[in-house]
Image 1 (cartoon, rainbow, N blue to C red):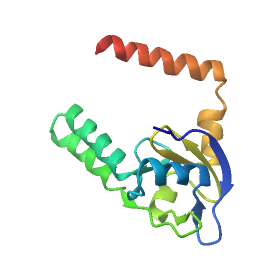
Image 2 (image 1 turned 180 degrees about the horizontal axis):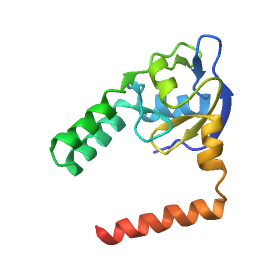
Image 3 (image 1 turned 120 degrees about the vertical axis):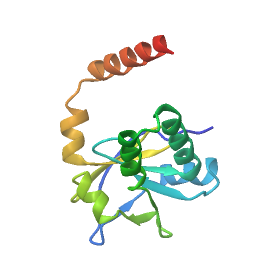
Image 4 (image 1 turned 30 degrees about the vertical axis):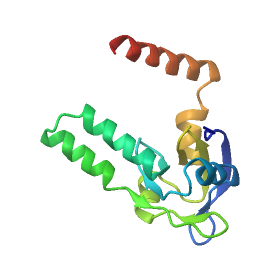
Length: 154
């Protein structure tokens, strides 16, 4: 299966539309057979755009990990409450809902990042502060150390 990788910098147009990079659209069309795409604030500071099947698997994973207590269900409700279908035009442009743009501080400059089976859309300034300020060595150490730690708990 071809995966979504890479980083693209671009801007919202005057109608607050993002142009989903052609490389990503191609993978969504071929690998996910044009299934519906959804916006979702899946992790802090960014908007995920994911195919319906990926969204379903991530929701199932969350439901299996979270006990069905009020606080956890409230959190899941907040996450799922941000889900909204992506309506793109023939040129791959799609309006990002105002509530989602406001939540992740997107105004004009955006960075789109391939995350394997979905993409993330960041405000450029936020990504610079949160991610790009890290060296590659720091990113590798942080990611791999956490992965090994979690693997040991499995």
